[in-house]
Length: 264
Image 1 (cartoon, helix red, strand yellow):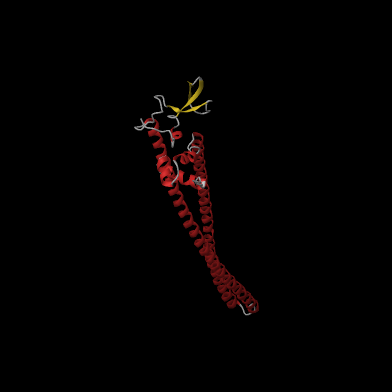
Image 2: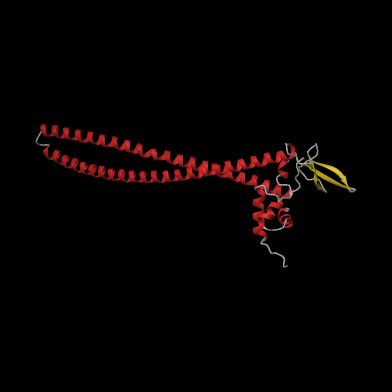
């Protein structure tokens, strides 16, 4: 009978997912229609202590990147708030324009009164007064043109402000949606990490402590030829060899999916 061929990458991905759900090696083999030896062959490197340490480091690195992204979003929000503050300058310009219009009206009134007084004094100054009146009319026309130009500018500014307001609202809505999605994902990650941590603590010092862990918290199942830097180890002698065993009570994440786990 020819040996059955497998797509190891696809099969390993399905095995990892089932293992995370709590399936045993035998249950995974039955689920995927393969041998328990094939399950052990593909999952044992993934569940080794060094692989678990790398997975924990990757999770910590991902959390750091999420925090960095959150800070960048906060800086973007601060920048948008500063830009909104600058738009208040337009309101000040509108107030100044009203003051100018009031001043121009007062000027026109004073010029009219001056014309009446000059006409009453003498006919000799009639020509000069007429010239002055013509000059005032030209000024009035210029002022009217200036007022019309200011009105058009104000209308354009109103449209620009409206466009900016619409864009800012769209940016704000997008930011709120992204922020809410980010908060949900971060909460899910935190809950998953808490569940993993609590599960590991149950394996090293809880109700379901592994039978391979001694009273001091050292795992007698995992043995190393050299000390592991940064971890508490103890030296033992086995078959005339000096070996080191690791204290998993200090680092319960090492036992996250140990294939040798057996509760007492």
